Amino acid sequence: MPSGIPSIAPRLDAVRPNRFLGALAPDDAALLAPHLRTLWLDRGTVLHEPGGPIEHVYFPHGAMVSMVALMQNGTSVETVTLGRVGVVGSSAALGARRGVGRAIVQLSGAASRLPASQFHALARESKPIRELAIRYNDLLLTQIQQSVACNALHALEARLCRWLLQTRDSIDGDAIPLTQEFLGQMLGVRRTSVTVAARLLQSAGMIRYRRGQIHIVDRAALEDLSCECYGVIRQQIDQVFLGTARGSSA
Ligand SMILES: [Zn+2]
Image 1 (spheres, rainbow, N blue to C red):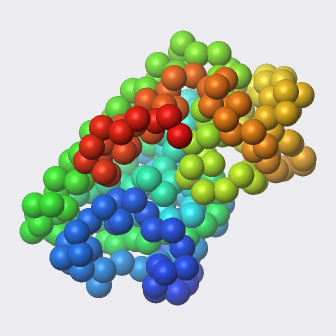
Image 2 (cartoon, rainbow, N blue to C red; image 1 turned 90 degrees about the vertical axis):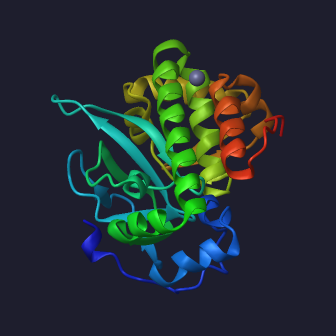
């Protein structure tokens, strides 16, 4: 639970900032700054449970957090990945107090957090913070909707490419420390299915897999094989944080 999370350096200079925080004008960033604490989040830390209280709002810098839907038989599937372009508990800005899924840290890393009640108060005080939070919440709904469609309609290999590319963007690196069993949980399929799909990508020279670590070798090829969802979501992210409709041809 979040209560045991140690604090690290209070400045963010050494890490690439969260895009929500980075999109704020200096005056609005200054409103948030006194309330933010920078933390190191360890893998497996649960930030909130379905129906449980949202105590803090988290802005990941290098950590990657998965929102996971849990089934009664113990299976689960990821509904959205929240990394450097995400905010965990963002609905608190609009007064929400309870989480709608499990938010669990999947890749350890830095994040800043502030009390959810404080985020709500600042969103009421500052129109730009409130409007960015509303745009971000719309983005989140769109991402979840895209994820539902992707899980139902797109081939596993294409979904795996999308997931790897989104994770790479979240952590800003080509080395992704995770197991195929974990990948199966995120994609809602058996580990053996992920193994077959990962082997296909590896034999095509796109990734290199060693025990517990996936290296992205050929990002362009992954983008070619990925379903449309990766490009769609990237474009929507840029629209929210840059305020312009940019292409996703990078
Ligand atoms: Zn898709």
